[in-house]
Image (cartoon, rainbow, N blue to C red; front, side, top):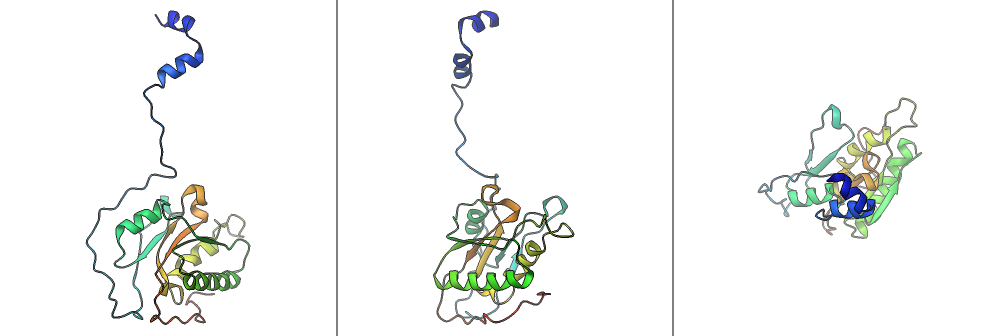
Length: 195
């Protein structure tokens, strides 16, 4: 029977017949497991200058390249959309080839400008560190710490590793807070682990 089908139908006709019931996949990027919605307490609007408390996602040995963190009280829907790449970056900063001090100065100026311009999601590209002398990404490691320390922690709501089509482990999505006039930010402050 198969021999008769092969003789009577061309290869392309057989392919179309076999694929007739298949629907194309519409999603892009890696599959992201959605976290269950957890009731959260909203951040206290009466204390706009209180230091935000960040929750960092646990990482294990096989997922060291994936980082994520958010301010306590952030809606899980926002974090899930950020992880999935659904919140498209409105600006990006490339830190490739910079020293630690240069990278921080550029990051601080970038974050200040983006926050003052009321941008929502931005992308920061520290690279993965393949060209560093010891093979580890110094800027990648520093970036997560900088985002949860003064002055950046005043404007950052959440951050996570970017989707593969946006650079994967060498890039990071950052969701900024909405600009409020009564928040005081010391943009001249240096992070604790600068050196």
